[in-house]
Image (cartoon, rainbow, N blue to C red; front, side, top):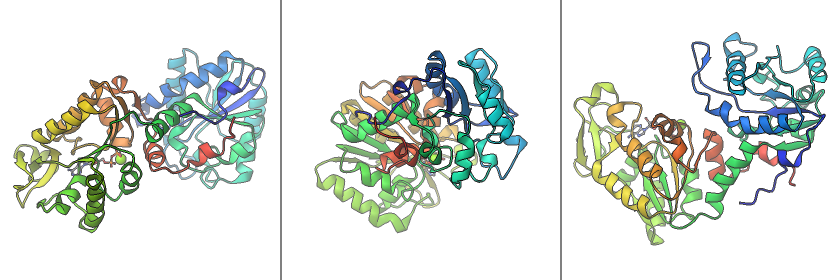
Length: 396
Ligand code: ADP
Ligand code: MG
């Protein structure tokens, strides 16, 4: 995909004070950053702007605070960012205000500070124009590198781009190029593997992908509704009977167009979908799911069929775990698919909260063509929706 938006490469930041929206909404554990993937993903843009003589302030949200909340301070993020950059990153006491404006104006070329959690102000999520103006005070340019928040029209992602000259950061560009590329010109055959809990949350993703793919593999909890639609019993599995018609429609559309649809042929069942059920779990054909048990993972024959289509595909998009992967005994299908993608020669793109987590836990993120840093944002993009944070950036 040719990226049409103005990017940081089109900006000469020398002598300018640049406000950079990053997505540092990272998991914390005991007051420290538990996973710094999103912080590391922002480094290329930060380094580029610094090397070219910009004076930078970074702005991000963390969690969902209701007003000021010390537990959701960005202090642990400032510390981790400082470690990654090898220099201390001062944390400003707030995101807006006279004191902040004064300190912004005092920034010198090459300086870097982090503003405090922008969601301490409810005007952020309200996309309040006055708040956006307050945020912009003292800055000459705005860069949006917060892909994970680009599907939200907030003051720091959307409103501000109407006030300051706006540019896309390198991460935003990379995400849009990778995810947009598989939608617009995937190398064929194009395989989509869609798992996760529910059909209802993936309907728009399926609607967008079905016309574009050559093969569709369905796993995870949502496969249960497809199994039901195909006339199989699913016992006490997670299932959405009210989505059976939708599942049948997807099935007909894929198969009716001579495309390949893979739904499970065998499954792992357990008395309960948690640790307690692990000891009594077993593999069953989809015609023999015990009425008192729940489907918790795809089975070995299903994985063999997955391996076949994965081996033939030139482009693979994967969203959603194939089983209840949080329980190690039910994580086999998800892990195996991560391995198959990692060792395939295809363009491999992984998007979605839990699927990305699974790939990272397996230590296979580096082996994929692209692992998205945006859960909800990556799915909205695949659904074909316009992301407000991207739309607000002018074309080149
Ligand atoms: P993603 O965040 O990657 O888009 P989802 O949020 O749609 O994925 O789904 C992730 C959840 O799906 C996981 O918590 C996992 O436990 C659940 N899941 C997968 N397979 C099953 C299943 N067979 N039964 C119940 N839950 C499942
Ligand atoms: Mg999820």
